[in-house]
Image (cartoon, rainbow, N blue to C red):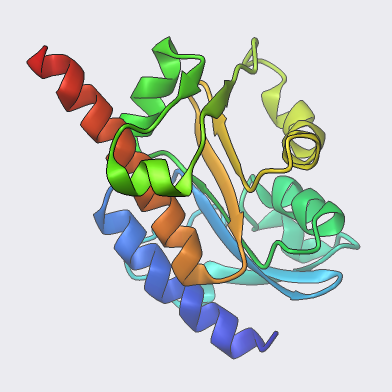
Length: 191
């Protein structure tokens, strides 16, 4: 994939996702696979509203000095790219309704039309302990996606990892998940 095209897609989509509150000021990550062993990802100090080229870094699977400035999620993205060929774009997002809903539920079953048409019952993964999550996450996330044959992993109280073939589909998937959880919340509030 063309580096410049991928960077422009990431910048465009991340701004929209930030405005929808899917990314925090310093929480979240977004990347695009360039080649088999190469991907572009945001840096750890990037603010997603108005990413510039300086907020992104090109990484290779063989670690070098660039990994020092890259997102804390870089190892997770790398492991998904290494193990799942269809993954072209990946994000970690913290949509507030989805993240809140995941705290008290073991699955998400969309009741709205668009969520129902896109998703089945979505399992909420419980990481059990937070202390060593970033050590376990690269292998657990990729393994979960492979074993469950899914491109979505909702993690209890943490957020969601999604991979897609296009940046547009990446943003759309996160938006549909968040909207379904928001509607579930409002439906419960009205009962």
